[in-house]
Length: 331
View 1 (cartoon, rainbow, N blue to C red):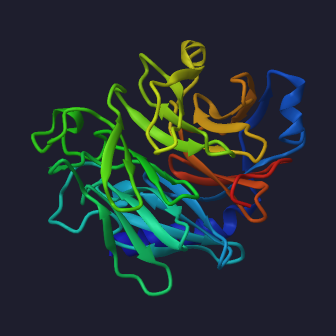
View 2: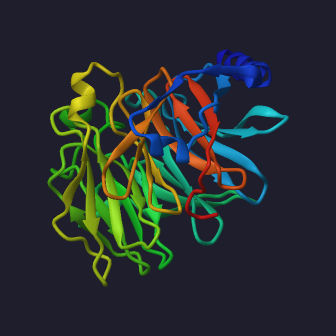
């Protein structure tokens, strides 16, 4: 009954919150307004969640899916309808309780139109046809060891997946007795299903995204001591080079801005839209910070939707969006 009441409250808020706006635009360079209009507003579409995450736009249907990991639920938002429950359980099918975030986190639609989910509690990457349901495990182990809690994922046009595996979904997180893999890695799933760890030296790998030419993999690190966006050159076989620091968010954290690097997406011209201190950071392909879409909340992730020019954002208890002047990859 509590879950139903919460859902009804969220649905109601989703209907009434269409007219709410929040946050502000913080330009550090005039080029910032090449990407967001000076009068653009951050719209609050719904609130009442525990920790909203992993949004993905479903083109075939014109709606948004996103996770609430603590509620073990994937919610659906559609213009004119608001919020409905799409899938529960979303990432953990065992006996509760299981950590603070048992549900799904990062979501994408793969090259075949299936829903791909990073599942914290079941510690796997799953795929599910949107029309019928019925999950299939894509990967749940590396060298016979179970993943920690897959967090975010991206797929290349070749079919290769890259995903991150920090400890956030484990009971006790990094101190969990359930851990089987020492590193918090970045993994590659080849088209034949083979799993390789391609990065093993990050403390908190989180969001992942590909450059438009798919020659670079960006990985966000949610580590206050090393808050970096890393850039890795992708080799012909899908492996990665040693990587480099693409952007350092240390100065923003020192300013006292709330939030950390988490999810990120890329525009068609290679500009990065990354969650970070204060909301969404807009960063050129050369690594220059142009400004911030300040949401006023700890912001978890974002995705492109509608015709590819609308940026949807999951921020703590909220689902938000803003109209941009650019287009996201995949549109």
